[in-house]
Amino acid sequence: MGAKLLWDVFCRVIDNHGDLGVCWRLAADLAARGHRVRLWVDDAAALAWMAPHGADGVAVLPWRDPLPGETPGNVVVEAFGCDPPAAFVRAMQGRPGCVWINLEYLSAEAYVERSHGLASPQFSGAGAGLTKWFFYPGFSAATGGLLREPDLPARQAGFDRASFLAGLGVAADATRPRVSLFAYPHAPVAELLAWLAPSGAQVLVCPGAVQAAVQAQAAAHPSLTVHSLPWLSQPDYDRLLWTCDLNFVRGEDSFVRAQWAGAPFVWQIYAQDDGVHKEKLDAFLDRHLQEADAPLAAAVARLSRAWNGLAPWPERLPPLAPWHAHTLRWRSGLGEQSDLTTALEAFVAAKR
Image (cartoon, rainbow, N blue to C red; front, side, top):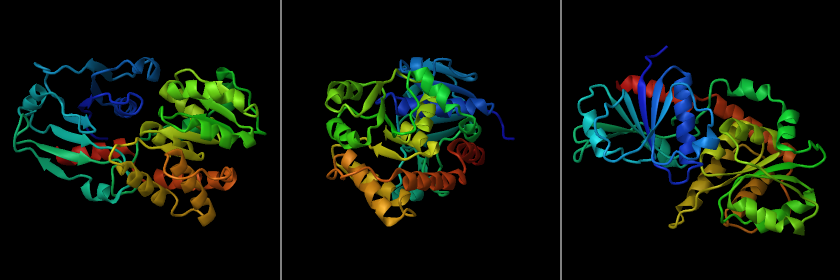
């Protein structure tokens, strides 16, 4: 059992469902393992529905710049290169053994394995003389792994699907595929609904601009049953993924949770103006589908690229049974690796 430390996690909200979602899961997981966590965030509003009950051991504090008079903890985590306030970084100079981590974005690209764990000595600015360490989530043992709470498999095994659906006002219907939809506003909703219509799917739509778009177009597809969901806490969002046959997810947090759910999923990657998201998507698809049968791999890759506006839409839904079997094998392989929090604890212990 390692030392119980005080962790400072800094989060700037760009997309509060992704960056704050990742930071909250990390903070809550660290606290569940006996650490104390201060989560410094510039906009904590989404936690009202994401984590309505908070978590023992986690203090949510407002990010102020300057942030004077605060003594840094044992570990400082800046999420996604967000640069903690300069006064706080200067105070780290007087904290021998304080470990400074830049928790980077998740990617399957090759540079992640090369860059994970590298030192970034600071030669100027408030942190001059300190060392920042790059910590990359990822899909192999050469990376920091993925966030996964120790009790996640047990919670999923004991999940009561019928009760959860009833609580959402959704009838359990084994004759039709159940699809969850969480997407960015520019998602091609019209194409998706037309594509799903022959399956007669139940479509469970998360809040946001996409929900309004689906509601506006649902009448054109009477074979579909559309349910508009309320904002769900992180545990309930996990349960939503567990209960569906196909999950459309976006960004980073829901993307990771869909992989632990073990059901077929389609990832809408965060689009970047320079187009580099295409390479990032392809890198993941290449890794994820490497062991899939060729026809299934081609069908899933085409659907994924179509959903991201990078290819024409396929004619039909990939067969769910073999797709499900593949995602279960993928999840099993990921589960053999250390989870991100465990790997981060070990990394920090070595650097202290």
